[in-house]
Image (cartoon, rainbow, N blue to C red; front, side):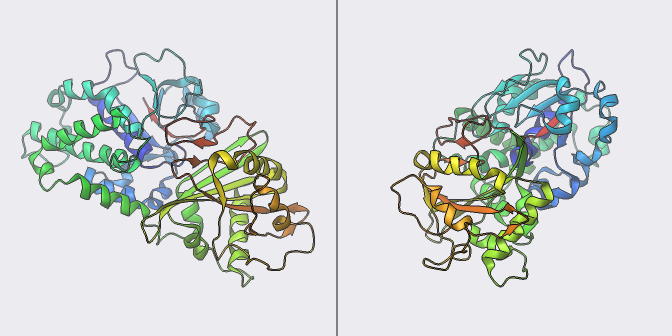
Length: 450
């Protein structure tokens, strides 16, 4: 999807790999090209990609990204020369959607169906259903083609030998390639399902895909040697969480989605560290207060993207092993009503709690702005009867457009808040542990061009 996470990467490459080995008889073209929906410079923000490329024997410079597409003014002229298969999302948006939506001829996705893809996508699949990982659905959909493809004849043109494997038997090379692709696919499934332990998220398709992919690995002696699934998962997962080398803006950009709804521009970043870590990363400004520096840095991030509402959702593990989620929301005045509606209406259902992060929260009893401002208004944040803590960050009023922020913790750890919006809006709000979604998700993701 638009955040170009591990699942988007692996599902697009996997789909293109299998389909290019064994395209349907009436395929538009025998060549399927995986497209990662980010600029090439953003690949470096995802250290887990680099680690996975080592296992899959992929050169990062060979990944096709948005930088490789024609200029937007040339899209309409090029549209008829392509067909698009969507993976890990089911609605093409933005300038890509404007120009290429009519060229979408297939989808494999595990989000709610937005009804944007035609019912008949033959010969490509139309698979949209709940699953822990989109990659698992790609495996289930295409594994028969993978197994039945005459891989040796498919590559008899010399592709094997062009890779420097001329001294090896072609069949052994293909088994090794398949095993490397299998490791790549396993990474996203294991990360998305916490190594098949995430209750309420793991589906049978995920379990079957893991078994199938491990069998592929075991068919290649050189790739099966020293293979250990648990160690592999820990390595990829820990690499994904290692954002220490990234600066403040890069951390927010690493897993970021943006869209427009009801004339409001909305954004959300998912961060694999607690807010306290992110606060320490915020650039030093003119203020000595880390809180003010953080709020100002968020405001700058929003201004650069013309955002009305911006949310940060964190996931982390405490020193005692407790899994935690935090939610931080910052809004311009045009979005205050929408965020207040969310905080009031969804607090009970989502088990939202006021949350204290020392570097981002004013001390109880600390002086508040004399004028009607963010902190005093934030008391309306939770349902009546709940004790309020003065822990919403305060932001300055600039040119009459008030910045305001909310800080909350999601007590129900199997529930994931996506963006903070008026619940009447038809936009993503909640994904629950049992897979139900209150509102459809609107991602922009990794098209596979064919």
